[in-house]
Length: 178
Image (cartoon, helix red, strand yellow):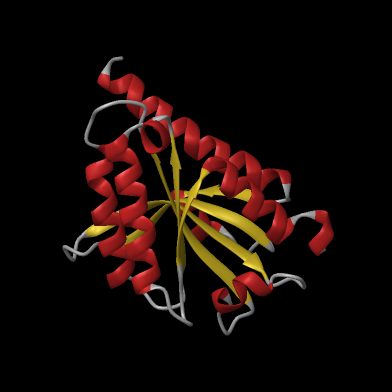
């Protein structure tokens, strides 16, 4: 598989995440277009969202989920900001074979550790590498252990498969919670 094709497949995971959110009423707002809004939707995902990296330079999250609080979301109780909104950074990584994607996971964890208090993060992993390869499984285990070490009452990092992400979205914003 060509290098660009792997990058394109990683984008498919992100598209899947956005599709799941759109199914539950989330609008997608790209990059700088957020600055043009006068009124924010009650549920949206801000793509290409700016943040300060651990190197003190500008970086971009793949997505930032922003939603109003709803009943039945106790498992996300620490996600609420004083504004009554939840904010979750979303990062997605696809890997189906040998490569360097798995080497980016420690950077994501370190970025979470150093990030702004109040923002929770979801790392969505997709591809056979994470489930069928010993190294991939070890990286997933490492990420989950590290996430547990850094999670606290103010914020959490969840390491999920794409199917687990779908379940999270259904649980948080599905009809049973509204």
